[in-house]
Image (cartoon, rainbow, N blue to C red; front, side, top):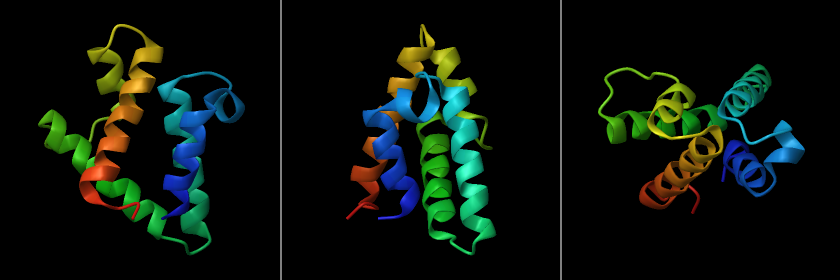
Length: 102
């Protein structure tokens, strides 16, 4: 299991500790910074796993290019907390379907 998957599981369990609030924009920025650090240190597995999720997200939503998952989910849901929960619902479904966390 890559470190980004492990980290996202911890964030899902306790978003306030990592992000300060249940907010997709904060999550996106956190993930972006984390992946940049991973890449800068020659660890590319996390980036590849998250890119696979983004491709999965595009497929689920019928998108040709990757729009910000935060913007898409915020438009689809009624409030930011629901959008945050929807992200993790999709992410966990991706993990099961792709067997990436096995």
